[in-house]
Image (cartoon, rainbow, N blue to C red; front, top):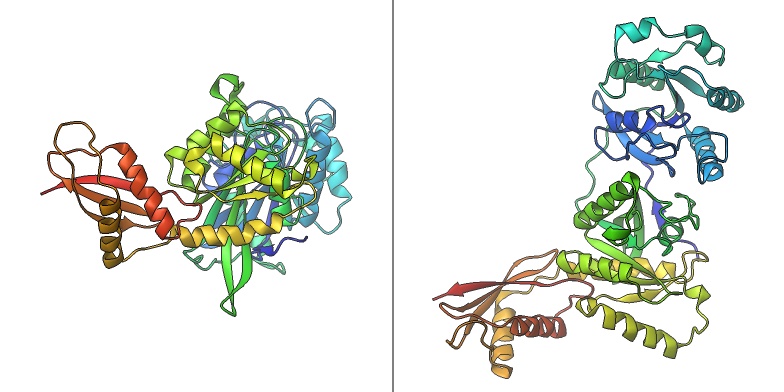
Length: 464
């Protein structure tokens, strides 16, 4: 089934950064969008799936796409996929920025890429000589080498210190000023954008699921562990009907790098990717926790479940690759649910969906579940209902003692926040309450009110 949402296109000019490995494309990308979104390293093939961001210059925006570094050899894993994504980005771009290393000069890879670029008709291309951070380096540049590419004279910049980057933007914006699609200001986005991170261990099928949710091959999918190295986000609009009214909801999906146990993490790139994934979880309203339905629950899965326990993020558990399950019966499905919740008892409030990122099985069900969980996250209980609730809960089960000898007494319960819902429970001064009783109150709140997929935070406050 096709995705029930559409990708939000801002109708902005698109600029694509292309070039061979290690010429500084990602450094330039971060400089232009003014944030450290892309991982920067000297390791060839650091960037795989194109990064996207917005450039703001003189009050107007353009869209920027950073593509993977090319070698035109088999030395870099996924080279064929990276080349395919790069060619797609070039064809869709209004302007191509062909980035070279001004200190190393022109290599055979540049000649091959220039040949491919020249085949794309009616495309504006700017040849950039990067890493020229001084007049001395500019004077030593072998201009004739660059002219042989047939793309004109190079424009000298330094992505690291920003030398000539502003002048470059002036040239680009002047060129786009007469284009069909021009740089423009963007109206403030609606406040209610649901940020949804897709997390899971390596090879759980996160990127396949991400592509199916979007309805296009946005990120590279392969069996190679840690294919996704950086979070990739795409904003969509989901249209649905509620009480005979059509409503629209903005959802920003974020595909993250696979997270595994700290002891098994190797190399700078994986560490950086996992760090960005964990940061993404903290910044999200909701997490799709993807579990490989063809395998037993692993220590990596349990570690991820632990991360979710400590945050205030809402959760939907996704049992992925369900198309490969030998038994698709409802009986087996219920048995799997029971087994998964036994490993993650702290997530027993999270709804569970069975999907396939490969063939799209039940992926469409994720959207209405996100809406349901989002609404539950905003649940606000009025004081009168809470007063009735806490009186009834404490009569049914008296509070148990924590540390100390004095018998505790619950004096009241008040909601102080939503998204996630936060409550303050007032207890008699000089007494303490057992943690199990706090859990009891949380479970009672879930029974009586709608908190689907959402953690409840209860803070204790001592009062006279």
